Image (cartoon, rainbow, N blue to C red; front, side):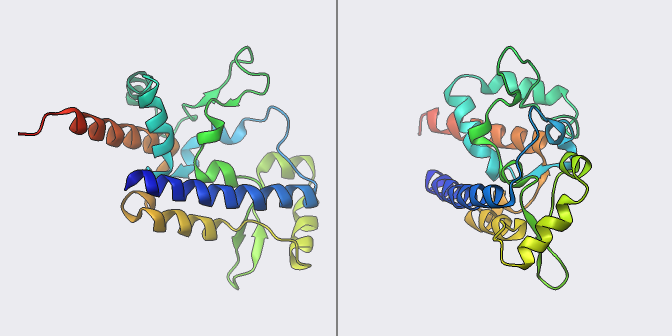
Amino acid sequence: MLLGQIENLFAVYAELEEQMAQFKRVARIDCLSKCQRCCETAGSVEASPFEMLPLSIHLWEKGKAEPFLEQLMKVDPEGPCILLNRDPALSSKGGCRYYSLRPLICRLFGFSAISDKYGNPKIALCKPLKELNPEIEDRINERIQEGLKVPVIPHFSRQVAFIHPNLGKDLYSINYSLRQALEIVGYRMQFQKEPRT
């Protein structure tokens, strides 16, 4: 059942990626080169344990989960994201070591909208983009009022929470959610190995 729910999660991500690509193309915005600011402030960037399950399964399958768990026990859950790659030798871009398995907020961050009190979408740009171009927020909000489609955070958050209400509705720091997900997957794998009497 869990694998079917993860397939549904990736279907939501695929829908988001399609909307995001079109929005970024039409709005003519993208992440700043080698910017890692959102990863460095991961304590305020929250995800559900459910969103971290695909990465957790991958880490257990590759034999990398236990070192991650040990590291997660020592790091500040509110500190920088444990998945942040600061070593330029490992990647020319830096950033997330497991980009394709990142949670929803990392996919939405900087290029999505919140709903105002009237239900209208308002762009939620990241701080570095706004600092670089102070007029960008107003320009994009005008385009949204004119009909530019933008991924709306609550829309996707509800979809994810609905797939697995127990693990998908409560949000924690990314580091803490990853730790929970690694423990859940580890327990399930151990339970499956144990002989039934």
